[in-house]
Image (cartoon, rainbow, N blue to C red):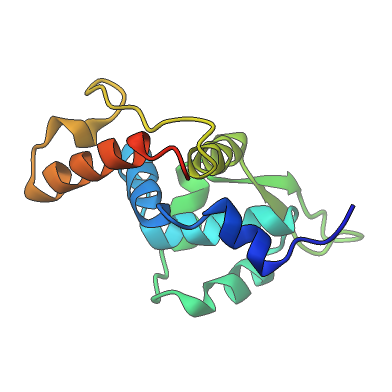
Amino acid sequence: MRKLTSSDIKQLNLLKHYRIIRKWACKTSDIKEADLELLIYLESIDLFTKDDFKKGTYSYSWDNRRWNRLLKQGWITVWRERNRTTQKYHIYKVSIKCKQLISRMYRVMLGEEDIPTNTKTNKIMKGESYIDKVLSKSIIYVNKDKTR
C-alpha cells in the first residue's frame, strides 16, 4: 500500500465542505467546535493521558472546564484506571459516541452519506435563527454536491 500524498487528498475534496459538516456535527451533538476538533486529534492517537490532552489543547482557546465537560458528557472515557503502584495515571480514550460522530463526519465528507435534512434529526433545519437558515441552505448545497 502506498502512502497518501497531498494531491490524493486534494483529489478526494476531503476538506471542501468541512466547515459546514463541522458546524452541523457540533450543533446536532451539542458540542463546541474547538472540543470536536480536539476530540478528532485525540481519536487519532487512540489511547492518551491527561498530559496528551493538555498538549492537544495548546492550539485552542483556554477553557479550564473542557476536560471535565468532555468526561461528564461522555465524549472521553477511562480506558485503564491508575492503581497508585504499577499504573501511576489513568489512560483514556474517546467514547464510542465520539467515534461514531467522527466516522459519520468522514462519511459525509466523502459523499457516502448525506447530512439529514428533516427537522426531527437535524435541528438546524428548523431555521430558528439567521445562522440556522444560512446553514440549512448550505447543508442542502452540500448534499446536492456529488463531487465531494
